[in-house]
Image 1 (spheres, rainbow, N blue to C red):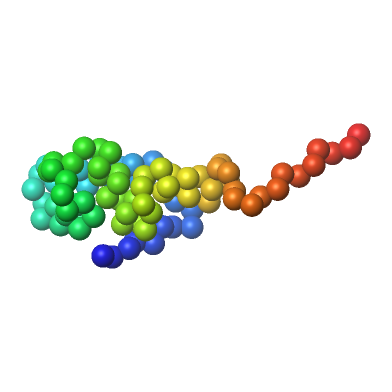
Image 2: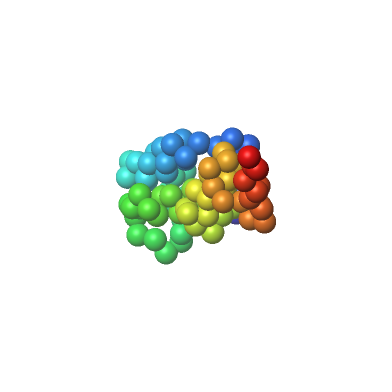
Length: 93
């Protein structure tokens, strides 16, 4: 299994588009798209749902699921919870 490297500043919009493109490629019968799906979800019925296409993409990036990938993207962009991060105390007047 090949794992793709997530960019330092990933885009959720781009990742969603990648999943849609994968799903369309499967519908169109593209061998590469089908092989990617089979590598990650060998028992899935084709064509894939959008949700399954997102799961394939997440696994290609090394995450167990789409929500894990989304959480990482948000964290990298400073919009998600950071594990172990202690909030700063409010300023004193």
